[in-house]
Every structure is written in structure tokens, then in C-alpha cells.
Length: 107
Length: 107
DNA sequence: TCGACACATTCATATATTCGTATATTCTCA
DNA sequence: TGAGAATATACGAATATATGAATGTGTCGA
Image (cartoon, rainbow over all chains, first blue to last red; front, side, top):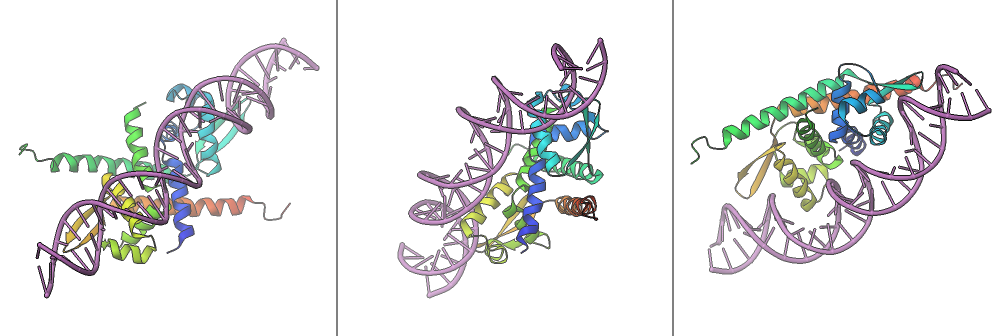
């Protein structure tokens, strides 16, 4: 059991394991945005948003580019979006499964 | 912004965002195992293992089957393994990137 | 029904996360 | 250089998560 490998793995997952940060991913999936634009579209207060962006940047999930006094963030690796979408599929299939399992006859 | 969607998303990620639970996924990726077998192969103490398995089961990440007095666990959806592997790739690429970026000349 | 094995749950404690408020920093333009 | 806009950081309180120890539950065989 390669403990370090699984630790790194879970560290990356931890970075994604928060509703605000998922919203950020969702906001950035179609391209880069400035912090202000993200605050606008997600409704997350600026300070809190910056905090989340800082942890995402620290873990290499997002990259930044400065333009004047705005900072633009983007997702560092398109595979993160693929992973995001896979999670969505798992979620959907799991919900469907639960509906099917919850005996349709109400018996 | 569909808050509920992102909450469910992050809940599923939270379930994966722990080193022990990643080890469990790693142990189960080639097929079902009993709790005892997992305890053996991962080195996680039985009580703690059961706790993690309980949360994974509650979130629908694993399914169980009883045989005599053993309980066998398996991963509920193969897409979870795909997601696991994607995360691995992101991790590797991110490490490579950091090595490249860490100026080779030491300048 | 009893004893033993495999697994699950509870509880208390230690640690980590989250988020608001206040404050810094960085940059632009006059 | 100074005001103001955009973003970042520090700090602390509330909350969540992880874990070991102890105990409970379900199953089998005698």
C-alpha cells in the first residue's frame, strides 16, 4: 500500500470536496474569469472566494494571469473537467438506482 | 448557480477526499473484498475501516453482500474507478509541470 | 442456546475546515 | 504621489471530520 500516493490522491480530492469550490469549477469550465466576475456569477463573497481560490491555486487546480488590476483564473488541466463530469454521471446514476430500488409498488 | 447540484457534487467528492478511503478504493478496484481482507491489505484497524466503509456505503460509493459471517464490499460504479484514474493522471501531470517550471538551470 | 468470529456502532477527543470581519497588497490613473 | 479599484491575507469562532477504545449486533457451529 503506497500511503503517499493515496495521500496525494486524497489531497487533490479534498480540493474539490467543497460546494463553493465546485461552483468555482463550474464557473470556470467554459474559460477564464476574473475574481470579480466569479463573485458575480457565483454569489460567493469576495474574501471567501479569494480564500478558496488560494487553496485551489496552492494545489495546482487553477492557474492565474494578471491583467491590470484584475486577476484571471482558469482550470489548470482539462482532465479536471472530465473528472467533474464523471462525478456528475456517477451522481445521476446513483440517484436513478435509488429510485428504481425504492420499490415502485410502494410495497 | 444550482447550489444543490454543487452540494451533491462536493458530497460525493468528500467521500473520496480521505487517504484511508482512497486506500479502500485502491484495494477494491480489482474486485470485492471482505472487511477482514481489506484490513489485512490496507493495514487500517478494523473499527476505523468499518467507519469509513459506513460513510462510503451511505453515499452509495460501495455496495455490500453478506456471505456467512463475512461482508463483502465492492465499488458501486466503475466510473468511480475512471474518476480515480483521471485524478491520478492530473496528479502526475501536475508534478511533471512543477518539475519543468522549477527552472532547470537553478537560476 | 452458547461461544466465537466478523463486522458495526457509540462516544470522547483531537484535529481540520469554513467563513465573516478587518486589514493588506497590488495596480491604475490623475 | 495619492486615491481608489481589485484582489489577497490574517485571525478567530463555529462547525465538521477523523480516530481509538469500548461495546453492540448478527451469524455459524456445536
